[in-house]
Image 1 (cartoon, rainbow, N blue to C red):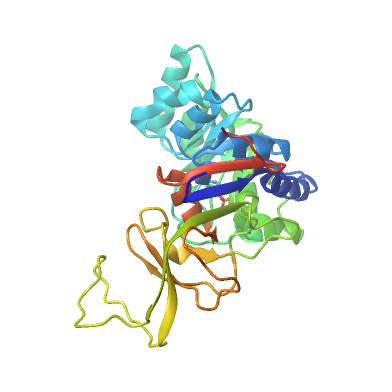
Image 2 (spheres, rainbow, N blue to C red):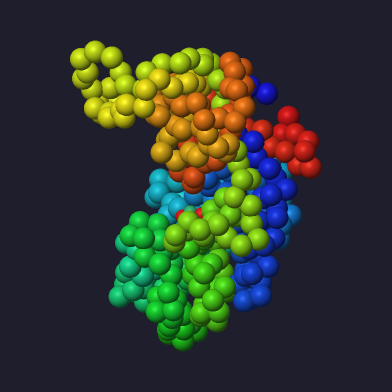
Length: 363
Ligand SMILES: *Cc1c(COP(=O)(O)O)cnc(C)c1O
């Protein structure tokens, strides 16, 4: 194994999925596992499926193609609104896509008809988070168009919250979604299979028993991957927070002053960093940098390691208070937040190492 690497504990992911699926199942909510933060990692998807998620969703077509090519046998939803220029590949590769624009729906329908298929869509409505989706006033006209397209089947109605505007799922916005769904069903005589209300930010609402009973579908990524709900990023009960751990290697250990010497200007990234005078400290240089992670989003797994900063290729840490003596060649472990998880899984410079029952499974 080379460093830096990210160790993926598939048993913890499976366990986390089982916990979340159990909670949702008790409230008649089906869970779709979201793999996008892992770039559609096949072993991660398989662990989610073993843990009981019904289907897999990812935001990138390439990731879904990767999962299919790896033989992960499930049904796939594309979580990002497709570009008009990609509709052919979308109909080819995915079972359900998110939709909100008439022109895209028409193109999807044409391509589906050409292939002799029906393409399922989850129509997205924006309930205030101000990212994707039709505005509620425009929903009925959108459904009118979609329901008239021969290559399209409306699988359900969905909304996404807590991603752009930070709007928290609530009894009010979930009721609004349920009302809109009822209106769609009555106006067009449709049966909606999925009322897809939430992502990892909606778990509190479910656990508190306040989720609207009509909402029957959830798209869950972070709570399964990192064991956190996402309104306060609190650990979720019964889940692991350390299914992903980043390992970097110590390149140098030196005793140096805590403040730079000489006249100072801006650093490599245009910042004028401030340094507190803490006298001499034992500083470790590691092979992890801004090209691999956002250092604000990692936390050392051991006590006594203080991250001082990073440039493109180096992380600098004060290891004076570390319990064991840190030596060149040692590995230090760090816990990623969601944005760092996305970065390390995307970086070609970080090795991915997945473990099941302690054994590597991705070689
Ligand atoms: C990313 C995403 C999700 C999953 O969000 P988590 O907070 O990781 O659970 C769900 N729905 C949509 C539309 C998304 O883009």
